[in-house]
Length: 97
Image 1 (cartoon, helix red, strand yellow):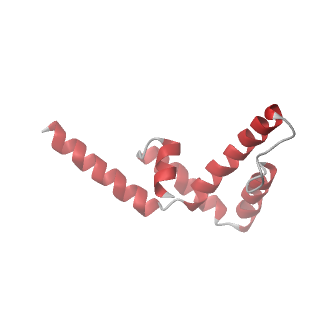
Image 2: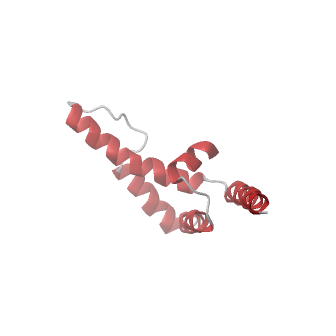
Image 3: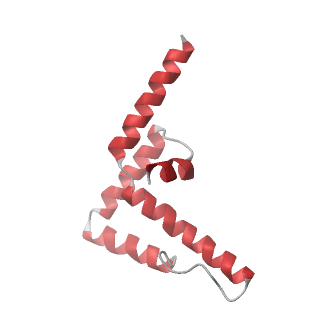
């Protein structure tokens, strides 16, 4: 899962970690959980992406992509991301010397 999150966001900067932290903070409230899960349901997250034709399939897959990214934000391990970001910073510092 961690590699998938990394590839989706393409960055492990503090900004990305803060974004994840804010989503998870909201999700950890009863109303926040209800709203975010409702958005995922609207995105047809977890359902088949196949439509009646190619155009409809692409539309459904586009909707589901939002649900997938939201699920990744909500399940990301902030501690692992911070650890990876720190390692990357240390490697960059060593290369700059």
